[in-house]
Amino acid sequence: MSTVGIDHIAMPTADAERLMAFYKNLGFAINDEEEWRAGTANIFSIQVGDSKINVHPEGYLADYRGPTAVPGCTDICFVWNGSVEDCQKMLADAGVEVVRGPGPRKGARQRGVLPAASLYARDPDNNLLEWMVYQ
Image 1: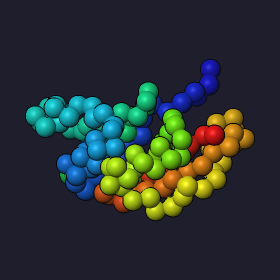
Image 2 (image 1 turned 135 degrees about the vertical axis):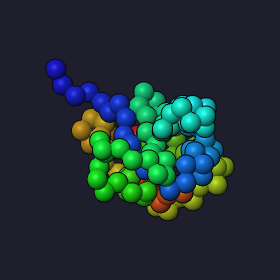
Image 3 (image 1 turned 45 degrees about the vertical axis):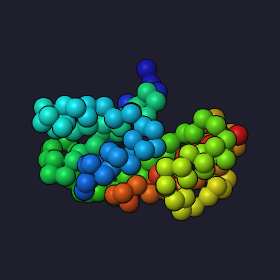
């Protein structure tokens, strides 16, 4: 047996509505949005391929998360399935400012050997977002 992937990560937010709108604008699906809005779910999540990001809305308390988790503490790297130019266009079309890149990066695929480039941006909570584009 071995660990083969990441099922989910969690991040807190200072403004759930603003964060949800930001990720929806980038084309991500939101899980449990209706249940969260109805008050029957404490959290919602952002679907990323076969993984997800659980969002802990403002005021959410749980004893099974990092004790110092605060909005803006997350650094996420997404894999973009396309060209650097397509990724830049997607971000520009969504009104997201690229704060760094594109530039060469050492990603996880093939233990860092596969050539890649990254673009960096920030979400409304100031979390660092990276899009890794393998070449």
